[in-house]
Length: 291
Image (cartoon, rainbow, N blue to C red):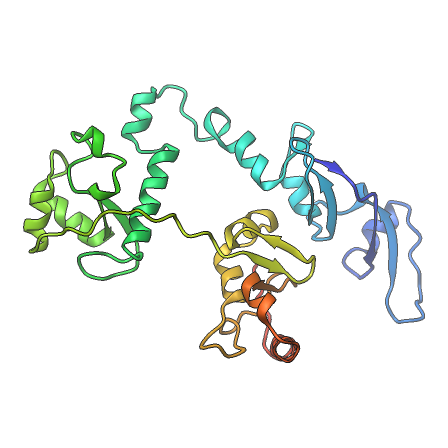
């Protein structure tokens, strides 16, 4: 990823004063506003600097902003990629550090690590409202094949052959009936009633777009924002949450790394008064710090 930003202005403090002085920069002793700052070459920034810089992806040419720290993390063999290209170029298939060249395509299918299977699981969980169909739990969810994955080849990716269970219930079923050659009839016997609602004809819901107020950038989802900014998506989600139509975003989380996030739909529909109340809210509550 080529650097667009060539120089940046940084504040000088006791922690970095010696570092930049040794590099030959003139450090002002006094500042009319009480703050010291200098302009430095981008290559002289500390590797873990969180200064926002503009870059261009070496694969697709997309311009984006990221911290200098993330730029260095994404640099591979002299090239750096945006989040989408990094996944495609560095994390998929043979480029993934977990790639096992000794596995055959058949073995990969047996391990259920292919895109079509991941999409199948998403559809089943969406259809079941991300809820265990046995106990109603919404935690540690898994997808169970009614007719076993090992023998019903045509049903491996058929949503009518999948049902959402929590980890505990899933283990309970297989403890009783074993892990091989299971059937829908066994599942209904275990569950205690017949199920006839398992089709899925809708499209998967689009993720909620997120806007970062500091860089005014719109992300496809909290996950995409988290990947680019190196922030946990769950924390970004907490920054976006809005409860009971009141201007109460999250519970105690207003920002992360000094960045504020809102769901784009909320941002677009907020009145001036609501936005002013939101700004007041974030100025009153404590900032979440990710250490």
